[in-house]
Amino acid sequence: MRFLVFWLALPAVWCATGCDGPSHTPDRARSSPTSTPTPVSTTTSAATPTSDADLCAALVTHWSRKALDGGTYGDYQSMGLSHGQYQILRDVVDAARSVKRRQGREAADELIDRQAHRACTERYRRGTPSGGPWT
Image (cartoon, rainbow, N blue to C red; front, top):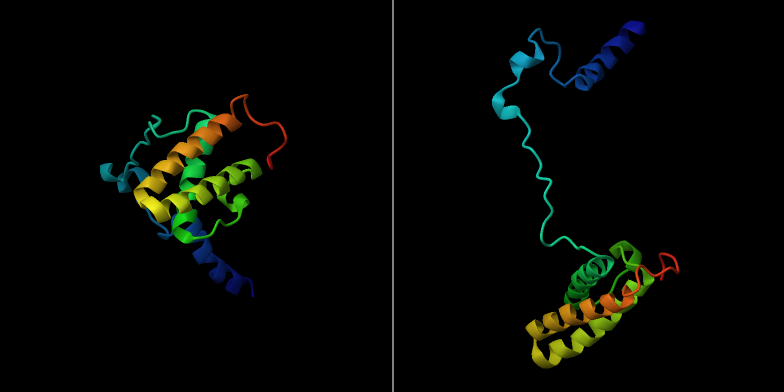
């Protein structure tokens, strides 16, 4: 029985050590210059939100466009929004639907950008709301 357990466990041991089985070649001899990982950039993008209001506007803008395309809002928690941000999204999408019917998609996108930025700036004008994550 022990012999059977040993042979069944052997492949797991090989995979835990690199899935290439036993080898007599040292690791440094097997590596090549092309296998060196590419360094990750640590600079921030210009599109990275710089404040709570900017982050709110970016989230609301993104999800407003999705809701406008999909015809439904979805769950605010799965979107990563607070209740207050979700209310901004609903107001923005309601207005954008009306503008889209009358003036087209481009005008609706401009309205989404403008209203999301204005509402989020107002929401965070005194810092982060203090009523908990649901506000």
